[in-house]
Length: 273
Image (cartoon, rainbow, N blue to C red; front, side, top):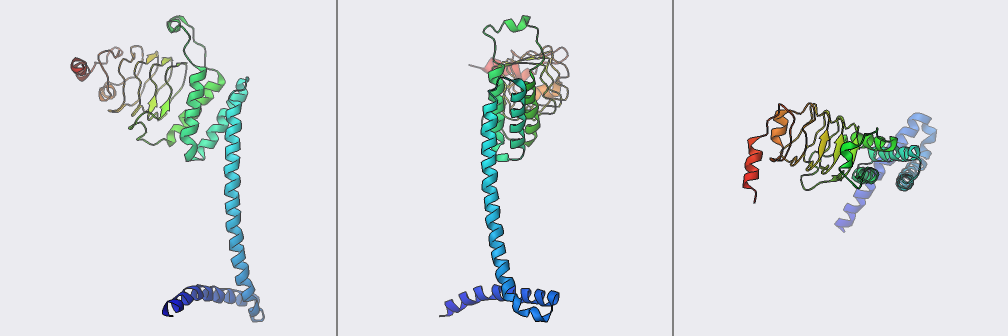
């Protein structure tokens, strides 16, 4: 019996307070003659609250459906034969990822896959040494710009448990990655030609076997998990001695003039099985 009484007060007290507040508001605003409207006001507030909750739920459902439809349509347009259409699809994907952290990884990996498909190596890799590189197509340029922009939302620990984003086994001429936070990127076996990596953070990323021909690394940053074994930096500009010494390199890593190879890299090679 006592428990039932407690439940009664738990339910009655907030309803009574709500009734009192509604009555007070109605009387003060409309006059004493409207006191009888208080019950109507309470009921109205209750149903208004329920309606608001239902509308919010429906809006969320509609928003998720629109997100899915826009994503599916943008993916479809990535296969369009016109560069400008593909460019628009890429910027649409970037906009989706910018407003939805849950879709960020999926969309960035989608853009990486698109770049890998479009910029795959020719049958003869040696052909790259004689090739005259043109500027990137507008869709690839848009994909890189979008990745750079979205990279500022990446978690700094990305890549500590394995690479998160794959940009490997491609060639990229004249790409601008300035100010990107390339945490957890697999950029191994890539031929970069005259690219810009100024103020780029390569923490936790893998650059093994890549060539950076005539590329700029002014204020670029590595950390102890950055892997730069067998990398050709010989024609780069702006690479810092202290920054290089932090990363994991080896005796086969080629550095530009004026940069000394850390002794630890050679020791590591000697200890290798």
